[in-house]
Length: 437
Image (cartoon, rainbow, N blue to C red; front, side, top):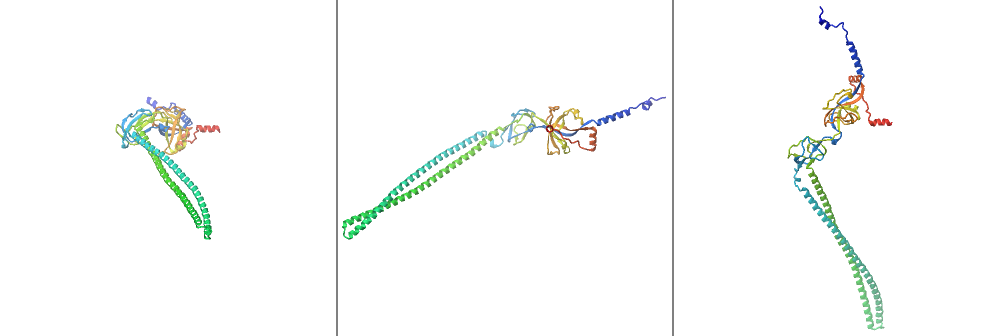
């Protein structure tokens, strides 16, 4: 009796296809070993902005104050210049509601003081001019008087010379007359007449000498008076000049006080403009960390964050130091954004789904705090556009594309622990230089 199970278990006489499948799989494996494989480096990163002003900006209070009104809430979209909140003063130096007007009144008062001193300087200049004119007039008068006295002295000296000559002549005549009288040739009357003439000539000479001496003394006195006038007017001019300089100093001091007060007025006006905190750009308000009315803000304290509406997105990737020589500017990087489905074939990135191409535009030369080097990747506009729904801070997995090598070479490299092949990225500038050469 033949058992059916025996025929089902023992297929000795049936033809087997194992050998055929073995050779088929072996041939397929050999073919796969010679297929191209794209070497790559896996990196991690996050979405950021290409420009600093497009990154999330903190809202800070420029002055200490108390919140009295909110104009926005978390999640609101605002435009540049929109009011976010209103503050009131908490410093007693600024409590006065008419602070600007009163400070402006002080400015006007200081300007009045300055104008007064400017008028005083003008008056002092007139006084100086009048004193200088009076001095010149007085000195001219004295100079004329001295000239007149000198002319008078010259006449008197001439008279004195004539009197001396007349005296000499009278003296000779008197001596002859006396001799003749002694000899009895003339009478006593004639001798007395000649004696009187001699006495008159002597008196005339003495009178002329006195006049000359008096005139000379007058000239000396006038010279002394001239020096006294110079001294007196010099003192008056110096005193008036000192008053002028003092007034000018007061003017300069007033100018300084005016500038200081005007600076205070400008500061007060500017500070009043800071009571309303406004948006610096279009965007969305997030992370408001103050609630309600009446809370006190310190100077430069954070209020919240504004996320710009328009952003040129980029990706920050972090590279291990061992892989840094393999990353160059212009290098292609495939990006996988968190939240977006992707099917990735590591060695065949062009065949993957849900990944987006970018290129490296900068590699930092300084290592980051996390022990990795940072590089910046931007969208490659020649390929598929990045998804419009990505947000700042979204996690990114990056695949830095390197050389194309056979699969067997990549297996051999990994078995031996060799790094990927080092190669130079040809940028547009390098290509242009090669063409020029």
